[in-house]
Image (cartoon, rainbow, N blue to C red; front, side, top):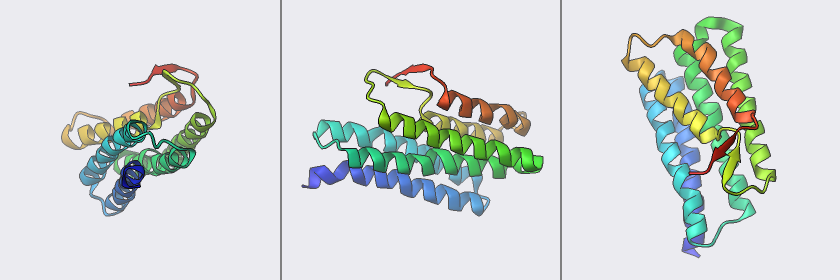
Length: 170
């Protein structure tokens, strides 16, 4: 019974880190917010592996994972990139982060109904959110990293999530 719960605990840790990232962003602690997203990446990487290893993978776990992923890799990075770099662009910045979040939700919903092994269709939201967090970390540490780059990178990540590109599973 305990083995059955371990993957879900990891998924809920992913969700908790996403929520804490959102709170850190609201409190203007962008460094912490980005680090918490990266912790979510790690947690998300182990929940599915543990579920398969313990032979406890389930539809419930898949759905819970997607809901956590939407928060941690959709909403949290979108809010972070908006607060850190895109808020000065007004409605354009808002539009970009809303589209990014909607693309993440679309990608997760599509993933949940497809039964494909060996590859993903579209860039996984975990990658997009983690990549966004790394870029925010770079923008915080490198004065030469222009915030305007997020006007291009964020919509590009949104497109890649909903694209039909085959991405090998890692």
